[in-house]
Structure formats: C-alpha cells, structure tokens
Length: 291
Image 1 (cartoon, helix red, strand yellow):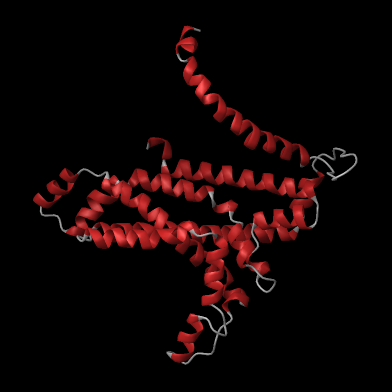
Image 2 (image 1 turned 90 degrees about the vertical axis):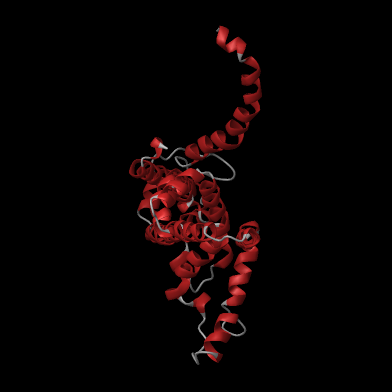
C-alpha cells in the first residue's frame, strides 16, 4: 500500500493510456467477439447462434484461398523485406562518404512516407501496357511485346511483394543502421588487429552484434503479415482478385460489401488467432525473450 502511495503520480500518468486502450482496443475487441457469435443485424434483434458464423467461414473455399494468398504474399514480404534492407544497411555502413550515406537513407525512406494510394498509382503507371516505363523498355530495348502486368495472375502476387518491400525498405534499413551504429568500435579495432578482412568483420562482428535488432525487426514484420489490406485494396482488380485477395480483404468484403457482420467478425478472429500463433512460433524460434 505504501508503494502504491509513493508511486501514485506515476499511476495517474498511466491512467489516460490505460483508458485509451480500453476504449479503442479492448472494448471493440470484446464487442467483435460477441458479434461473431450472433446473427448480427443492423436493426432488430441479434440472436446468438453459437459457432455458426465460424462454421460458415471454415466451409467457405474463398476463405482458404484468401489464407493461402496471405501466406504467400505476406511470407514473400517478410523474407524479402528483411533481407533486402539488411543487405543495403550493411552496404551503406561500408560507405566512407557520409554525405552519400545520408542521401541514400533519405531517398530510401521517402517511399515509406507515401500512402498506398500514391505507391499503387506509381506501380500501376510504371507497369501500364500502353505507356508504362517497364513495357517501353521491354519493347524498345529487348523487342518484347508489352505485358499487362496488373492483369496477369502470374505476376500479381510478385508485384504485391515487390511494391511492399520497396515501400518499407528505407524504414527497416534505418533500423538496421541504428543497430549497427550502436556496435562498439573497439570490436572492429580488435578484429583488424587480428587481421580480419572487411567481409570477416561483417560476418563475425556486425552480424552477431546486430542479432537483437534483427529479432525485433523480424517479429514486427511477422505481426504485419495478416494485416495486409491497404495495398491490396488499392492495387487489385477483378482480373487478379483471386490471386491477391487476402484475409483482411475477405473480412472487408463480408462485413462492408455484403453486410454480413457475423461471418466478418468470425473471420477477423481467425486473423487474430493466426497472428498470435505465428508470433509465438517466431518468438520461440528466434529466442526473442533472450534479447
């Protein structure tokens, strides 16, 4: 009791934060869970129907197609979005010109500040079969016929992966560079005294010392796999919808387009469950708690 009185000011300062999460996070989550067990209507009674909404979702082939699309696109973004910024950060760390390093960081970070409406418009313009830069190069340099990338199912998922990695590459790169900046210079001096080459310094000093930062970035990116929505909403079209519609898009279509709130709420809790399971696996595999 004495400890509570001693730290009362701290508890009072925490109160707005706690209220924020209760009102805007946990209360909507509880209401969503309640809705998933109801035959939810915008007006009138909302009777409880047990697990019927969950059964509808489980027996819906579209749900499983959306899950596979999510794992494919999200897994590609996770892998490429982790390795590409790491490679660039290690490369920039070897650059001796500070002005070049700062300029490169700025150029890489700018796409992260843009909305998916802008990013989607850029890629749609670049990949246009009529006047897109990519097709102009294919025709004039390689003599290849124009490809309608945004309407070709073979390219659809890979385009989503590339555009997402390009957008967030600068942000993750800066996180890696911040981790590299925290490595003690004495470790590099000791390695050079032992005759280590630049590659050996990266392999035996930089990468091991960067491991904790790598774990954090990997976990943060993992948590975003099942939350992909804005990008798909902006860049999809009927020709490729079957290959790029993810779980959040499935939830949107059920809840907003079809006004089937109950199944949409049930699908959203599957998303929560999958995220928790995947995050737990990553934490266990990477020994995140040993950071």
